Amino acid sequence: MATKDDDRPASIDEATRLATTKGLDNPADSDSTDPITDSVRSATEALTAISEEIANSTSAAVTIGSVLKNRFVLEEMLGRGGMGVVYKARDLRKVEAMDREPYIAVKVLSKDFQANPDSFIALQRESKKAQQLAHPNIVTVYDFDRDGPNVFMTMELLEGEPLDQLIRRLRPGTLPTEQALSIIQQMSRALAYAHSEKIVHSDFKPGNIFLTSKDVVKVVDFGIARAAKGSDRVVEDATIFDPGSLGALTPTYASCEMLESGEPDPRDDVYGLAVVAYELLVGNHPFDRKPATYARDLELEPKRPKELSKEIWNAISHALEFEREKRTADATQFLKEMAGPRTGRDKVRPKWLIPLVASAALALIVIVGSLLISGQNNGVQPEGVLEETSTLDPDLRERVENLLEVAEVHMMVGRMLEPPGSSAYDAYQQVLAMHQHNKQANQGLQQLGNQIEESVREAIQVGKPEAGQKLLDKALDALPRHQGLIELQKEL
Image (tube, rainbow, N blue to C red):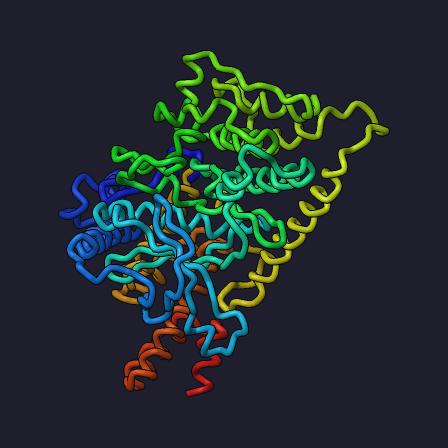
């Protein structure tokens, strides 16, 4: 859900466009030997194949007791929403490893994704971004996958309740002010971090906010809102899918620009954040649950409760502006306005800001530490510091990002090492030839090695040791420093 135009979810036609912009008037007929063009063409063919497979699949419906990918056993339904059903699932890999916590959450997405194969491709791209969001107030997304036509995401299992249930249970009452403010600050931190990563949620509402049993806020469905496509029945706070584009919104929490099909912007999330903040502090919707466009045309104004301080009211009313240009720029600015102006060194900070700063500092330490560790442990990464594509000049960055997308498509359809010249491995190697310490390419090679390791083990388990050994030999030739493959070879 990036705000940049070139980050919009792609379809098969978009992949074809990428090929033609690299000098192919007809990607299917050209004899070009340009490696990027060839890789994009093969990725286009792969996208076509996977779309047809999803469209033609007719597997049984997913329900309690179903097993996805021979790994995730669905044991309990935790919730149902416009985008799908969430189950508590037992991860058999964790059971084999005697993990004391073998349970995760699995979100099986609605049949709209089966009926519209392009949505699967878009969701895969958007979910990849969600996996990169490492923040204590954002739910951890483990993976995105499919089993036949059933598209699903695996996430951390949360205990507690969604914020929409809490608000309905308390309505028209409210939480104690300090508790409400704590929730608002945690929600704001999650969005501030996402906005710093150029990601817009686009469907921020109480139903996408989870309050754990330890009073920790977790924002969910990053990466899904803008990739959704189809239709949904209109109920209170239901996500409404736009069949004409890969987008979704909830009318009572959507900004005017979202309702009028404007381009996504952090200020859209800020509007939803302000509506939720008002509900938590006041006990009702600022515009009596009317969509922003309707409230704007009626010239409605939110009422200011007497118990709210001037700073908090100014922050919320600024974020509720109907016109984007007048609205708070992003969640970081919203947090600053909630804290009030700073006119001198002796200005007293609000009590809630102290744990906010401490938590933000801790999160920064964790994120930086994890990045440093990931560059040391994978056995694939060459010496040096991993680098982001943002450090490259625009032309080179575009070529690298196109190749990274091609590699992801190859991974998605199982083209890991073969065919030669048109596989995920080849695409990642092309990236590293242009950008030696590219972070995503190195992480992609590590993931590739992990998948091959799992495939080899499965081959051995089903009585095909020769095929497993053959695959392992090829993988070690390509990835001689992958620690998991090295250890597997020792075992065999």
